[in-house]
Image 1: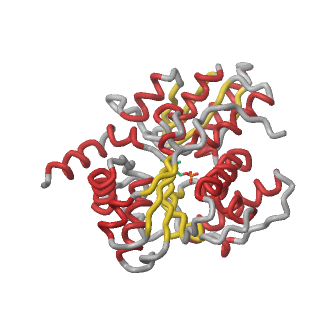
Image 2 (image 1 turned 135 degrees about the vertical axis):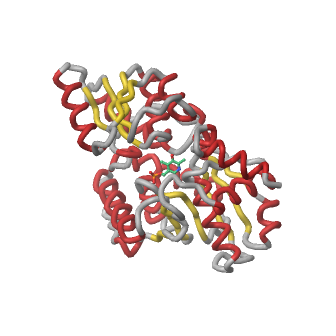
Length: 327
Ligand SMILES: *Cc1c(COP(=O)(O)O)cnc(C)c1O
């Protein structure tokens, strides 16, 4: 048995988006609501962290150490999971401490995590130093990689695929669209899909890496997890579908396409997307529907991965205010 703790409220809802489908005149659109996993305002890291914390507990760890961007959702959910299971938590965040904590960072502090800022140094260098210090201080540290994307974390999304397949039953799904950053979410979904001989295709919308890098990384992670499960399934980068055309000005920089997607989901379906991940994945889905690549008669499942607390932090808060004021 692979050790696991309970963090997510499962199964998350699977819903239809009829008004969005109608407005686009395109495929039927379904949504998997992993923004509603329930841990610290929800999001995809809850599923991964169930296995990460299970492993940390089994190994006798007492301090969780992880890293991310200033508005990292992964760090926010790790801080909450640490609080829930009585671990200390150290977060290494990129850059300088901002004058005021907002969004995810405000919550990191609320959950009692200690935040270490990298300044101009590399995150990996600082995280290694923090880990060594915690080890020397006998705090039994456990290192969680960026996005909890390793063989263990990926198990959460391999299971999530099975959960979704049970909910959708016999419906033919042509495309599953999901934001892909550190790759673990997509890796778990492609592994689950392959194990189930699923007919649909899993499209990862890159928020950061270029197409070749992300394909290679997702294939690597899926293989690692298959190895952990003693499964014979193997992936090549060619087996992984990635669209990296919607990265705009780069990671974390929301542009017109993200804001339009956020506005459309809100106005037509009452659903809140985030500016970094689900907003970008939705922008890609809208683009691919409008170009005719995803067509009427098909079914597209949009996997909402959460991330909304960033909307209440700069620069996103001001960006959103400008978009809504424009009309
Ligand atoms: C981390 C994150 C993702 C990307 O998941 P990966 O497993 O890192 O690819 C997508 N959406 C949100 C909101 C996230 O926080």
